[in-house]
Image (cartoon, rainbow, N blue to C red; front, side):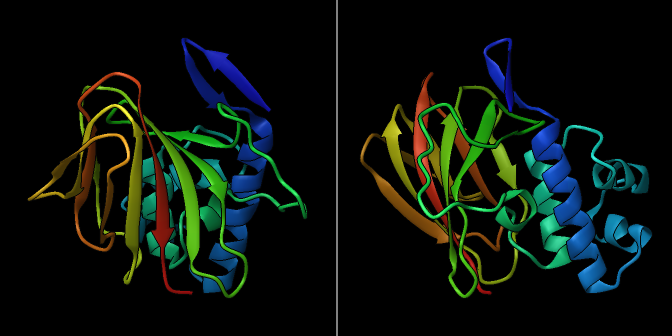
Length: 194
């Protein structure tokens, strides 16, 4: 399912097919055309068309923008059917990479119907900050740093955090996450309205 390249994990065709099906399902649900969704998300129509056909390699930014345009959380675009018992070992799970920073997000658990939380394992390396545009209205992010140090929170007032530190902040306003040390890891819980 996953291929190791240059120390990073990239997504193989199986998750891309899942993302494609989820994008088509959500676009059909909204009744919007390819052009309408692409314009609302700020992505090229050809990019959305490729993603819906299972081609391309979507970044975190692209999938977040599409989720906001479709009015669904990020997890709803990448989540597979979940078995009754599920174990995700360290280094496994669907990994999506940022195109602007050394940042990857692994979806660990997605909300069940009627619930409001998605859980992610974050792996961050020093370099550019992961600058996030506002997510779905009402979104809130909770983060606990497991190792290393980072700056996280509101884009105009990030807080330095270390191992064991917890932060909660609105996800529906601009916010950032930037590693200050190599090997920084954290758990993020994305809370959203259904």
